[in-house]
Length: 566
Image (cartoon, rainbow, N blue to C red; front, top):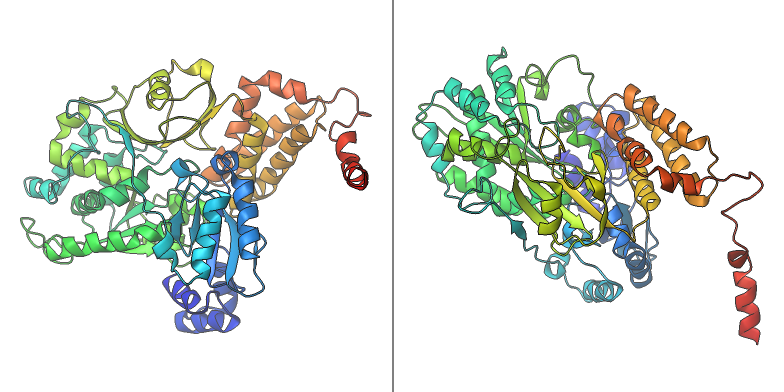
């Protein structure tokens, strides 16, 4: 992966010679290398221009000016979406969520962030690039907005950080005692699966093998999610300490942070933090107070693939392969990275583990509910006055969260991304907890002016595009679901199409290999269940009547022409 990035950076794309060179260097066939390069969004086999522009196409971008920004970029650069301008200066590409949902429309230019785009801002940026300014000079400084955290010093994650404090407490506990603390705290994985963290660490500690790994999943690609971005940006040291705690607990000596390519702009800060910890004696050498225990961490940059958020696909990507989910015959804690015992947790989970060592188990457990201890970070965006990061205590009612973020007339609330749960405003008395509304981190709010079918279409496009294609139900089923949603949008849906949509959803959910396919129909199913009247309104009762046909649109060109002559 690193070698492909290195070669691509030289000329802006991967040539046939580059593919052959990598094949020779790694003892692979050119077909294998081609398979890897062709799998990831940000590896290119054709010229991409001096400046590569990636415009986010998530639903939040759609609703906040995507089309006008797209048209402006095409006009100012001369590059059509998916191509390069005649001079070879600008390449313009569409991409999935880039982790900037609280400031849409957003784009990356040579992997530097540009936010809250308008046609006027696009013109200034492109003119600046044409004048010789580097993208880094023109990029927006990302000032993180922490909108809410529990009062009276009750915040767990978003509180003052003292480097080394958690590690200073680590010397007071044996590895088994650390695992007992994590288990007793009730900490569960914060990425969305909510698997008990202490249990996972215990499995890895008991696994056979002298070589073990700690892997941080920093590939948050779920649309609407940016909580890990904020932690990486504001508290990289907290993540590092959490990984050291995990390494000590399970007996690992190497840690890897798998950083999504969309967060390349955070890489310098992350590497600087790692070097500070090495200089302070916490990485790369025997750690003070822990005897001869050694641990070090490196960063592995991804190349753009939502599926790599699935832990086994991430492991294959780490090994330089296509990021395809493995068959679930064994846990990664037995055979993970390079088939060695591996702990995989996301950024928030490791940060929470470090706070447990720092603050103590009881401080963590007194927050939340019996089955959902501690706090949870939520990325809130969409139709609200205060988008940004919220640290809430588990058990908060949806009603309170909507009031906190200033949501006016909320109609649809998407929890945990398109693969999560679609809620109606009628459900605002429900609680955000493992006992009720489970949320991995994304909260997207849509008010009454938003069209539900446009939302579902965007979600379905996302899953269709991001499927790895390995299994037929997901590869073929998601395009079919997209087609059916578009039939409703075009007014072509017949009465039996609602039931057909549910049947196809069941096929995709129950026969897909990994979580992408198994959860991709969630929002469509829930929309049918919770908003049946909207689907009923779209149905065509008379097959001879085509609602897609518009006489006004059909005669528009003629009328414009004749009016111009008048």
